[in-house]
Image (tube, rainbow, N blue to C red; front, top):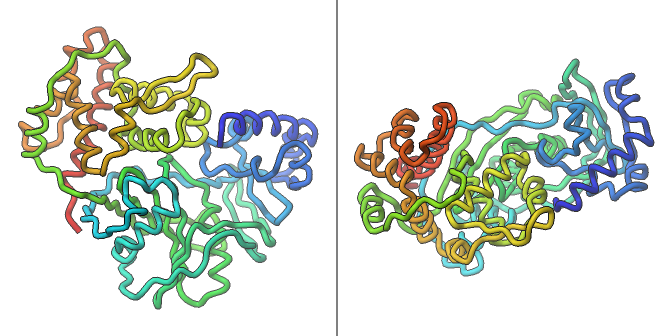
Length: 432
């Protein structure tokens, strides 16, 4: 969603809330309906109702803990639904995959959309390994379709509600059928904290009623050559809020593998540079920083509000990740103030055009030139790859952050620990 779309949505929903007295009606009823015709009178309903993550919700929805669900082809229901599911944040060891494809059009570093990520995972055998299904997979369903008619229960901030759905529109990214099951796949090429359960639940209810085989639900995220697959199921088919995580696994495509010895060699060959006069990073996920760079590589320049909406960030997080990219010399601003947009630097463009292993080498070099990160990596390698405690990292980075309070220094050290985790989990992964 672009900045223009985001701001237009907020203004349009403000008009709708006023014109149709939505808040007043919600004080008298647990949920209310609004038609696509009413929404279209202000702005196209398709743009006004698609919120994959909670951070994409309009301000009025966030302020009043509201969510919106389609209940027919021309009707939406608004209420204080618990419509989103947070992703499990536990770190899953990576399984490393040697690339076995020679398809020039499906090289991992060129995969920038969901459909290509799904195809790559299929051709590499990732779905078969993850599901344990050894029978052939056949592409069977996908695209837009109607839900049919069903009722379901959904949790709210007070008591559960029962809603009726009749031929609402759903879109399935991919569906594969084997002798054992029908697999429905939702895919994203950006990383977020949560997702709207409807994207799995509505297709599940549609196809559960049509096939006798088990319907298995897979949520796939792809970034930087890494596939993260999560399988969900609904413990009670008629209860939207009964979603549960069944299993989770990460897979990384590797042309070559890192080792402690190769990292020592890279560290020794990378010259140290003076610290830039820029804020020390506060972005706590190196994976997300890489993912942001991937987005900028394929779509730049992008303004800050668009990044916030597209990525599922809050505004403060966007600032942190853009600042971290500037600290590493990967991101630069074009223009100033409200018209400012962001893109990759020339070096950043080159890095993200490289095959994955070369990209990762170049990113590590960007870390190793900075004295604080270099000191921490030297200690990490000296300890044969054993995890470093936050207190150890605080002592190592303190000489370059002399004016920070202990609490602020601890937060900066936690960022370094988190970034080091990107490397550590890769080293600890097994080869598939």
